[in-house]
Image (cartoon, rainbow, N blue to C red):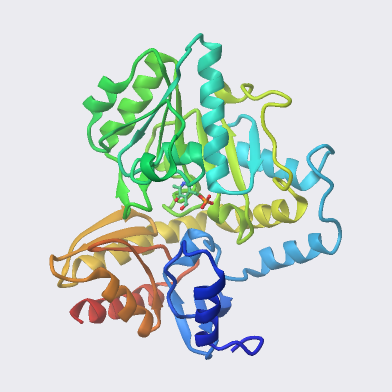
Length: 396
Ligand code: PLP
């Protein structure tokens, strides 16, 4: 119980007052530390979800807590119309950690997508393209505001939310030829996730990634990787593109970037750095000193080479263990971004619920699938414990 509200009372408030956008589990987490969570009854859980890949540094990491507290007690910001050291240090840090160009700070992944779409369209208009087109991959997820939604084929439902912005098209995620065929002189960008997270952790084949780079080089379009979920060490390198050997023109980031606070970013390389000019884009809250200080602390924790090596090693241990479990028919991912498919007839949502009951938090991104996104600070014993619970929960 917190503030005198039981789980049943919270459910009533949810049913009465919250818009019905989420199907929530009947658990209230009230405390977190590292890879552990505690609910309002005091029950302890091992967290293999990390708030949807937000708490990569673990819950309440002391360096992040200290950075937030210190900045919150000093100065909470005065808009983007004045210089601000935390925001500019963060921009430099993001640039130096990746593509080397300019950075736009945002608040969320969706906003980073929107800004990247604007950059792609303006870049195309400058090349004389009148009707720019952005190509994404089937099952991509880029967010839920209208532009990002239009690049998110599964949710871009014209009947419910139309008219959606024009100028978006999709190709299968595993077909390099289809991507080449879809490209034309109107292509403004090829925009996709290197590993599709919301769809259930589906790595994009190397030949599709290479074809995307080639298509962009040939047409003058921008290659944009959505690193909102794959970034911040999740796959064992700070940015996932650093593990695939293809450099994009732009990456978008969010989720774990803010160390638990809402921070998004668009990071450009040389070709896309100078597209946005004064008046083209902006945001009141973005880059505020409290969020930026949290992000700098999160980057300190997650850029550590020993931690990234551990992500790769524990990812192998986790995937190896999952492959041994009867009832799991496919295991995929990189680092600690792992998806599994279950044998036909096994109800993945029921497996997730049994895991929760047994003290393991994980996610069911769709029928027959589970997704594992633990904090990156987990240890081998945590992986082994999670495997035991998952094996028992798949058995039923
Ligand atoms: N892009 C990807 C790959 C995501 O996974 C998400 C969120 O799940 C988003 C964009 C949207 O981010 P946000 O929910 O912060 O707006």
